[in-house]
Image 1 (tube, helix red, strand yellow):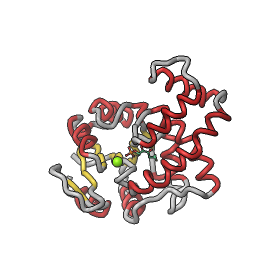
Image 2 (image 1 turned 45 degrees about the vertical axis):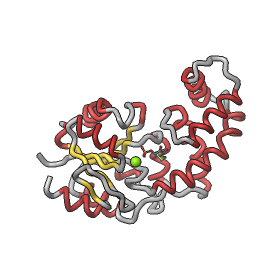
Image 3 (image 1 turned 120 degrees about the vertical axis):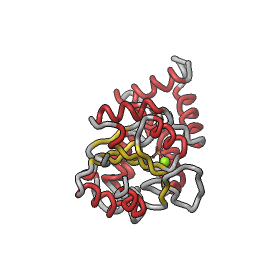
Length: 229
Ligand SMILES: CSCCC(=O)C(=O)COP(=O)(O)O
Ligand SMILES: [Mg+2]
């Protein structure tokens, strides 16, 4: 059955892991404490702070404890939804000022453009919030690419290692699992999507090896494999 939709991960797939770990996360760690102290009563910020206090099982936790928990989660790369929402909020100013630019591997834009021209619907599924995804592609090194995508999914739909998340995305996209291709560098994400019946290709960007098949080193190799699916 032909592929009608392609869903891509970001970190390690469209974008070098180093950009996320060495640029985006340090930016968030530096900016979040003051942002939270100053904006704690903004409704969208207050909602995330409430969720963090719930996760900590400390409904009355001091703001500084919430902030130190967030910094710990950033340093240990935890994919916690309210952290991801707050990161997206602080990155916005960085992208708007030009301090941040969404990094993409050189093979990404030509392939996405070609797939779109072939009539495939393109989506993003990342642990980064939908707002953060839109910023990365909207302020990318190749300009505003948000028009390439029909939709964006984050951990509000479920964790990326949970097969049920891929069933929910297929329902939202309105296609059978067998018509959707998922691209990710992470083996656990690939296994979860395969368990939901999706086609998957694992991206191995830095010469790593993996027992999983099929795999590709870049999006040009994905294009070649697409023809055989
Ligand atoms: C959306 S850009 C920020 C990336 C991020 O915060 C992250 O956790 C990356 O996760 P991914 O699911 O894209 O590997
Ligand atoms: Mg990834």
